[in-house]
Image (cartoon, rainbow over all chains, first blue to last red; front, side):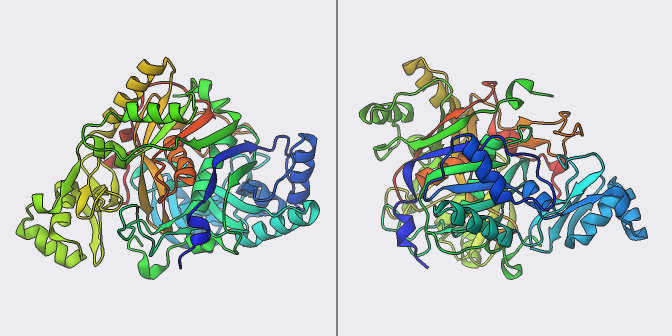
Length: 261
Length: 261
């Protein structure tokens, strides 16, 4: 599919990326969209049509109650044994297993697994840092695309602005050191910009086919949010996109084309 | 190593990303730094201390003469056979092989290989799109970190500003559809922001250890440069970084820690 509407001018050429400061600690049952709008209001930030809100997975998970205390998780014998092997607490390992479709690689110190959504990441995204309290563990939202849609619709209903939402999390990569942020949920835009069938500047068919702009947006936002600054919501302004429906699940390579199973 | 100087405030909170328009077609022997400064001048863009210039690999390669015409490449019988298997021209396949340390995966339609620098990517980065003419092929610079250093030093000498340079290229990823831009060369900054040993907001040791900010910068810049807009140079402004020496080669996971060989 050729998206001429977006390929010609995927941005107005001057991107602005800034955080909404003052987002409070989010607890189970909180309305993330409301908290974001309250914080924006306090800072004098007015949302504009076309703004993309990049939201850290952790506050969405907390709002949705994807939070576990160690003492409330009963580890199976299998989780205990795998915990010993990988160096994780049995309860943590239990949560990782519950949230995994399969283990991709495992060794002393780490588990790389595929979540039920299809994302391949360390420990299926189960995290015990910045969880709000010691001993608490946070898992990914059940359906991050749905979470993104809900937040988008709520913000649009309150503001009358048309926006997009990206829910981001941190991923390691094979072959490359360091981690980057990528998208696990989106709403209001397509995850990829499609160049297939387009010609390059010399009239040749493009070798580059699809750019995962949702992942690039998540990475760009991470440059502003960092990891220790309590800035879980970032606005990317002036990125021009086609407001067509899309999901982050489209970013999961289907098994047929996955040569690194 | 704890980089307290950069972790506390990795950005001033308001990132600006914009292209330098009007960069001319680059030919072998061109001075990339000069072309960039001329184009900036024509557009009234004044470089500032702390600006990060993200430069598309292709113009650096072209300036350095990493350009081949099909008729000047003699394919070995081996390259011919591999070309048949993968669906590539023998001369193209020959160049891919010459620029590969090893083949990681190969099948009908594609080759994923590791370059002599260590980067794992499609066709070792050899590209025939946007090469300036049909039948021309462009390979990666021999030492993209050195290229970045040279451009940085030349621009700093001309402007008196202290900048950083990232040379970017497009990479596919295992498990995820779509491609994103990542760094293959840098100068004037570290490629990763190091959180190891730091405490999270709850006083726990961070699970996230090192963020590959050079890759995130390359991805962020791609949102502005796109693929068909002749915008090979993008400025990222207001990203605060430690101006310590660093290389993109540090982003190559050493073999000992590579579980996806």
